[in-house]
Length: 78
Image (cartoon, rainbow, N blue to C red; front, top):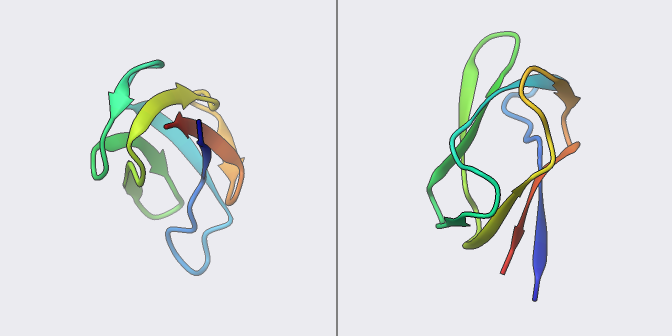
């Protein structure tokens, strides 16, 4: 089985970090490409992040915590 790590994306040129504000899916559920999976708040906006892979979802990050761009936040196992 392949495992993909989802990292905090760089939503803008100046973005250095973001706060995970909401999960839209639970641990262990099957997710599909394009499905909204979490929201991250930056200095200027809140980004809704869509799933880039299909598979079983696993949360790594916690809501209310600020993460740097590139930090692992979730995994998807195919």
